[in-house]
Length: 469
Image (cartoon, rainbow, N blue to C red; front, side, top):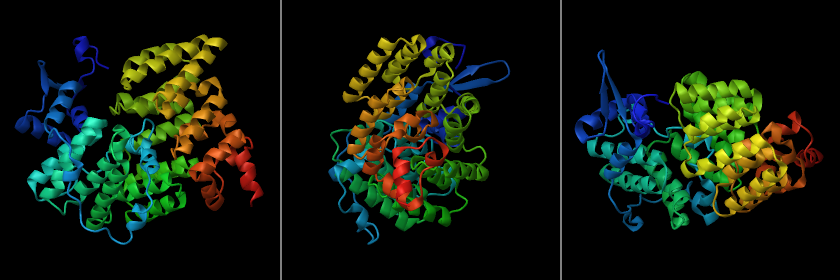
């Protein structure tokens, strides 16, 4: 991104806006942390003015240094008894449910790009200064993603609600932190973590029923349990309670997208942007949907604006542009884009894919698909695996991965399920079996067929839905 300075500084964050986004707080809070707590910020002096910048590695080290070193789940204080309306969510929860939750997954547009809770400057969240500081630091850690930041976020947010038991936003953040933690730590007790997530969400909602995050956590759990109708009702209720909240419209749009109702998803996304025209998560949702369902060139332009002008350097944004460039055969541009890859060790898969697609050799392509399927069996995320091979047209390999995931109750992103270019993926009875396993078939029977049933070639599932009318 930057053209000056040493290679070690190539990833530096220039300006308070990007520094604040990295640590997950407002610009004013970032400035305060620099002055009072030694947030590592540098200045490059020019004749007219100085440039403020920071190195991500230094910021990460500072964030982690602000949290305790151990996590003892047994020491976490639990809130009081659940309200009667919450107990049905706790009953019968299994390990599969939380493994399927994956709120911070590779291509999750709702959670990966959205700041889930208001910052301190948005409202006077608590009168307890120490609780506010713990909340800010915990939320910053949670937004870093990963096992260690998530673990320390739980510690800080737990301490925040101990300092102020009526701090609704802190309870909501703690709910999200407990919900995502098992996604990063295979040794975590997933049932206990989800139990704690729901307890914290219930406490947050009893303090402030209008909060979007804990309410939508319940909706996502309903989706992963296959109860898509309940999830829809939760989102509808949330929008009715707070009709001027763009975040709720955005997450409701995500629900519609994952259920295959793309026109509704676009309508809700545009409503979010009407309420807040420069809302980056909604702009990202619009850009991705535009790129894959409406106009690839226009979607690419929107993604480039988000990356270059808004500083939204998220994996989903990078991936979206990579896929568009692949579809357009822009292999030289893809090679340059590779330098911006934010997926760390997994970036090598995308580099390899580019070369395979560039050469177009049949035997090499088959070997590449086989290697990706093998890597999936060894831990490569399913969404990434299918995304890397979907342009090969090997629907058998794609369906095999999707079937294995659906057997675990895991939903793959809608880019894979509903992309118009992947009609063959949806054509046969194997896809019908996948959506039946996930609860989508029952949802479509009640709410109406997904958009692809009218916008594309007839699929087995569409014929089944038609025969039942």
